[in-house]
Image (cartoon, rainbow, N blue to C red; front, side, top):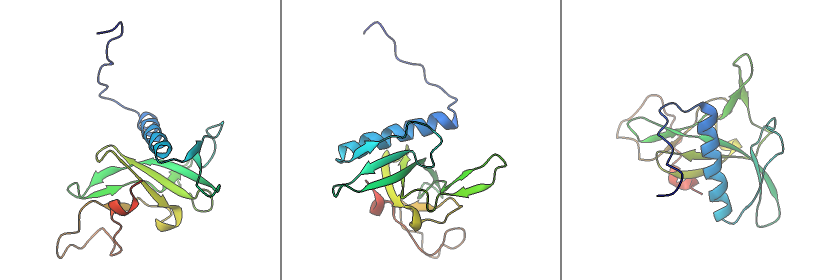
Length: 149
């Protein structure tokens, strides 16, 4: 063992702390995939990262953290932010992609901003819907595997 002991498990993690962990996972995986990753100098941008693709094009990326729903068959994330009055603010025309990290699957999903509803919590399916399933999920199904980084 070294001089330092391992940190104790923190039962309370802030929203900012979860977001920071997700963003760090996303950055590492983008870099492993070969992207150049740039970060804004200040935290007041509508995007968290900028990536450069293989053609030298730059894309604005908003990082999000996913959570499990529907008996662990669906991943959800917020495709909006909130203003001071808690009004939902869309990212349309301000970012190009969402990079979504799921601590439950330990994967990153990359989704174009125009593929998700602007002010809701879109979903990515981990499993096909059960036969005859109706209710809160729209007919258009997005499978998480199709968006894995």
